[in-house]
Length: 404
Image (tube, rainbow, N blue to C red; front, side, top):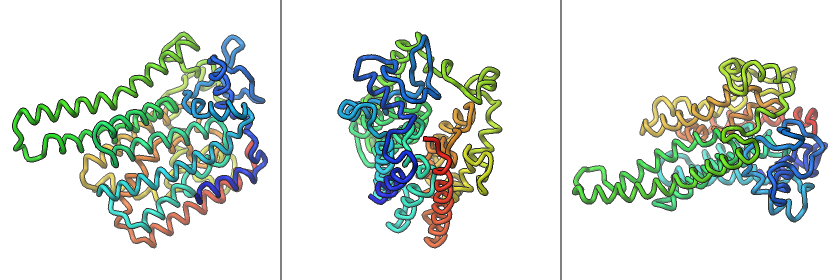
């Protein structure tokens, strides 16, 4: 509720207020779907970042957010406010983090008091790049917030649920994440490993005393669970394949080749959309650059640990927490998602903070929760306040320059 109020107050106080943003492209894609086509039927005021082929405009972003918007666009048309939609999705993400932390404590993955969980929740809502993205709509921000919610559901389901229900919901959530932002599929490593570990322990036992028949039956049951989890992801991959072939005649072409690259056109022509050439710049703006005082480059990112120092708690958790396989799997999940981000042309221009890091914030936040559980509450509180103060100041400046 607090996140909803704050996000909506900010949404209503900037120049665009609650009107749809200039870049409410998912509204237009939802309209196209409702009229049985894949290219935009109506054109938005700006076609920046869209892909044009033969005079038709497409989105290179995967389509799941547009599917979520279809009922609203059916009722109110493309003028439905993506700003309100995105703010409420952002608030729902905060609720999902609350559920995730509560379930992690209940299942003894972390040992946090209610006060520590409260501080971490305030930190996520107002002391991370989530705070920059939630109040402003825009296709880029909407995509990331929807994707975050999908991953958060998968992690919660892996921890809180059992049996085929757990595997099925994790698979469905990761399928939705894949249909929102492709690289989010890699974030599914930890819930997949955790589910297998949990259910192998329960079905076959850890003492080795079960007879071979019982073990065989247990593994057969687990194989059925895995199939239930994998099926939604395979269906999502098939949907993406058909979607790309229908639009561009190529299963692997999402539209990037036809996108207007703007200031990145020269680099794209020389190195393509993904290249080691971009790693140095992306590392700098996402992890090393400090955006204060506000100056040239301040809206290309900001160091993750400078702006959100609470995330430093992930370091001791990655090095020393037990069971080590869980922490290491969280680290690998983070690295797998971060790799295509570091290889991508562009830093996520026109934001405050390293917005692409939101893609791996679910495993990072869980790792951080493990790392801060032995911190004095005063230290955790101070670092949360520092994070919130920096993002509060940053969002104030960002609102002044935001082109809506």
